[in-house]
Amino acid sequence: MAKAKVNRRVSESAARATAQRRRRNLLWSGGIVILAVALIAVVAALGLPGLGAPDVIPGTSQANFDISLYQGEDELGSNELDFAQLQGQPIVLNFWAGLCPPCRAEMPDLQRFYDEYSGDVLLLGVDVGRFSGLGSRRDAQNLLDELGITYPAGSTNKRSIMRDYQVLSMPTTVFIDSKGGVFRRWSGALNRDTLGQITDQMLAQEAAAAQ
Image 1 (cartoon, rainbow, N blue to C red):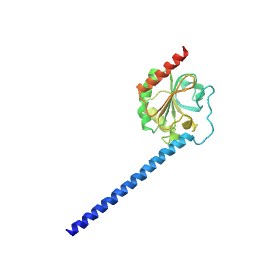
Image 2 (cartoon, helix red, strand yellow):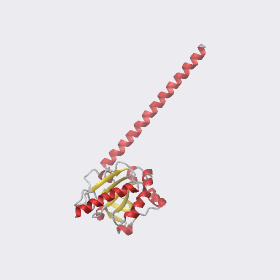
Image 3 (cartoon, rainbow, N blue to C red):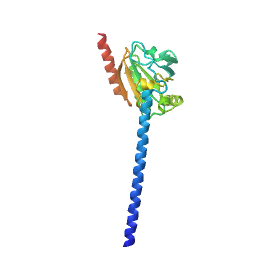
């Protein structure tokens, strides 16, 4: 009987020690995750390197940036251009990355949206994988090819774009009206219906303002 009690106490002590180790590991892992998220937010907010004020497009509230297209030259007129050259029309600006699972999930809906709204609004995908740790330019191009995406998409060398457009999660989509004002900013994946609803609201507002 005494031996059984001793064995039980030893087992209980071992179980408590295991539980304590698990709690410490969970706390440690949780701290790592929180620190990583905070670091991403700080880097995005600061737009490191390049802490100066953004190069704002005249007559708008939007920061200018260079674009090197992966595809869409026929539609936009050049492989290399500045975002300022696209102003004067409604734009749906989608920030994404080649190794971003939510970006992959929403791309077919973006393609359907593009097929339906081409001519009414410009859809432009901007790969920020290098700045978010979610893939290289090659990863981005491979994803476009794999999914059969045809809307204009490319990358930029301007790291501060993460700060300038408040890209704090992936993907992020910014709806910009013809005057360069932000109509809506959406963090996270979008589906075709939501894309259409927000765009219809933006176009309706522009039509009402023009009357």
